[in-house]
Amino acid sequence: MDMTKEKQAEIGILKEIAELLNEGTELQTLLPEVLHKLLDVTDLKMGWIFMVDNGQHRLAAYAHLPEALKYDNLAPMCRPDCWCLNRFKNGVLQNATNIMSCKRIEEAEAEERYQTDGLTHHATVPLRAGSELFGLLNIGSPHKKNFDEKELALLESVAFQIGTALKRIKLTQREQETALKEERNRLARDLHDSVNQLLFSLSLTARGGRELAKDTDTKETFTYIQDLAQEALNEMRALIWQLKPQGLEDGLIAAVQSYSKMVGLNMNYHVRGVTLLPGKVEETLWRIAQEAMMNCKKHSGQSEIDLTLIVKDNKVLMVIKDEGAGFHYQKNTILPSMGLKSMKERTEALKGEFHIQTFPNEGTMITIEIPV
Image 1: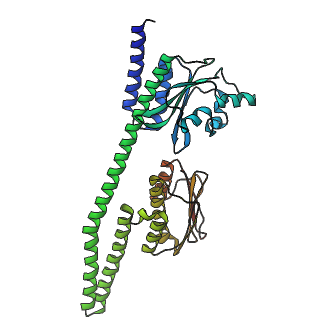
Image 2 (image 1 turned 135 degrees about the horizontal axis):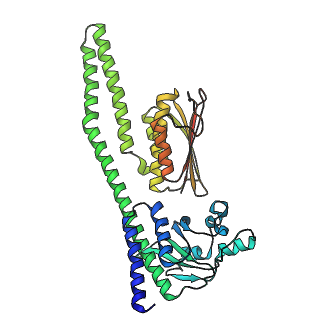
């Protein structure tokens, strides 16, 4: 192939990748699609993408892996150490390069249990946007031990496109989260300034009417109105807390303690190994704890609630338990309330696990486990 055709082919490849990246908004589907497209248009055979965050890696996409790398639910790809990841984490790996051999493949060959399909070497390319690094693109083919400079340059261009798309998506997500917080704050202010004040005024008016009333029936009517207004006022204050949690800036436990007092619960808490949690994880745990406390207040018949928070092995575990009324529930059946469904959805949105254990008259225990 002459130089002009080579250049045209390269431009065509980059164009197809760019079009795919420009359309994508969800990393979970975008990265596998891009990887498959890259292999299709370059005639390379195998590949995988690692995302790296805070020194921890996860397999974000893979295509046509040999059995030696995907057996036991991709266990070889989840092992923490390999040459390319170690170089990346140490800051040594800055550009597209050949890896002389693959540690994961060598370990698989040493076990003599699974086929490698001829894969012995791979090229590895950092995914970056400017100076910001996101992870690694690894590409290989059976019996291919070397990538020439043109191949590495093309892979580096593709990796830069992917890195730029990752940056765009993360910025968009951050903007959406900021907009959502601002909308919550605005709604909380509006509720406090309007509905909250009206309910407070209604409560005071009912109290005044009760004191001025002469007959018993009228007094009881005003008392009933005051009780309803006070109950609605308490519900409104709880809602405002959920929209704009006061005290979360002092940490999750401080916020949960304050909220439990506000709704009239006595919370016993146990904390082990907790350091600073990522903001999104902390807010998710906070929202779940709020919902659990409100459920306890409304349905358990108890004023005591236990909360355990443990951080260990890159996971945070939160257990919320009461000894109240409980209810009928069987594992793997549909959750009976929107509140419980919301807890489960919030947990799974962060790739966590949600479990509930409850029996009539034996209390309820909710367990949340989220990777951090």
